[in-house]
Amino acid sequence: MRSAGDTKAAGWLERRFELAERGTDVRTEIAAGATTFLTMAYIVLVNPAILGQAGMPVAAVAAATCFAAAFASILMGFVANMPLALAPGMGLNAYFSFTVVQGMGVPWPIALGCVFVSGLCFLALTLGGVRQAIVRALPPHLLAATAGGIGLFIGFIGLRNAGIVASSPATSVTLGNLHAPGAWLAILGLLIIAGLSIWRIKGAILIGIVATTALAWALGDVTMTPAPYDLGAIGGTAFKLDLAGVLGFGGKAGLGVVEILFVFLFVDLLDNIGTLVGVTRRAGLTGPDGEIPNLNRILIADSVATMVGAVAGTSTVTSYVESAAGVEAGGRTGLTAIVTGILFLLTMFVAPYAQLVPLAATAPALILVGALMMSPLVDVDWHDPMAAIPAFLTVAMIPLTFSIANGLAFGITAHAALRIIRGQAGKKDAALLILAGLFVVRFVWLSAG
Image (cartoon, rainbow, N blue to C red; front, side):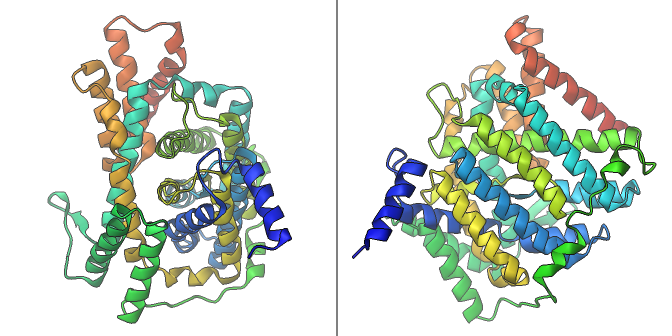
């Protein structure tokens, strides 16, 4: 029986997050938030490992990763009321460590300063309406292709994490070792989640992850070697960013810094747009014309999160495609993101223990979500080359280049080129034409390097 306090709290949550309007409830949102957290908790271990190679203190980065993910997800939930969780982005952290710090010789405090400035630029572009204009200018077939491409991407990540697919020098990818514990555990987990899903059992994904984790531990297939960790270690990276160095007072001004800012800006911009389109579409939160609600608030929250993450001591914070797992578990409001954020906050105290949940347990969730995110592809007119070619390039390049940004770049560039060839490019296409031009310059720059 509920107490008066519980009823009052539930009523406030109902009103604040519009639960009934979006067809959800508190219990569903909590389960969805936990599901999202479990599918992206790997970042607590992976991000410090990558940034540690840039000379950053690993324990400090672990704490900063948890703090940044917690702050960003909770901010997104309260400000935008969307089920989008955020954390330091994969890909951008590798670029930060291997290219910027190790390759270009930029000290990591200055690199953090670049992340902060890029977040400030994101905010300026958002307040100026540029980011919103890009989202709204995407044609319907590219919106559908982005969602489908992200589905393939998520599924591929899950299959790779499970060891069901593996790298091959001859064919790039091949069938993995299905006799390995991780592979058959993931297959079993997929059967559990899929079976519960077809019977419409609420929390199917979360139940499957927990069941697979328990089985892995029972069979002794999980080994945990937590490193020494102290919550106060965050002081090793917090407020260590060097803005003066970015501005040139540290001798690092010039084309190098411009290139760094360009990459941080556009990769995060496109990753966010792609994730935003794919997740909100799957959640059924887009309008009849494909418009995303609270778009300004979403983008502002993302911009602020990147700046706060840089101050805490981590690379660019971005929306996570794994949020789709929470959406598939029923998450429809910002309460999902807040629950995810709270769990990351609690993880700050026990960061090394994030490896309690093996990748084999979260991989089935990603595979299932990837499959279910393919449905928007039916909206593409595959008989019309004007739609089919850009859509195909978007769908194919997202998983094949392991980058949402690259997929969108190919799709937008192809769309713009075909409109020019057909003589249909007009003023309404200005945003996409400019963006396509920038992509061409970026591709030429990358190939020349």
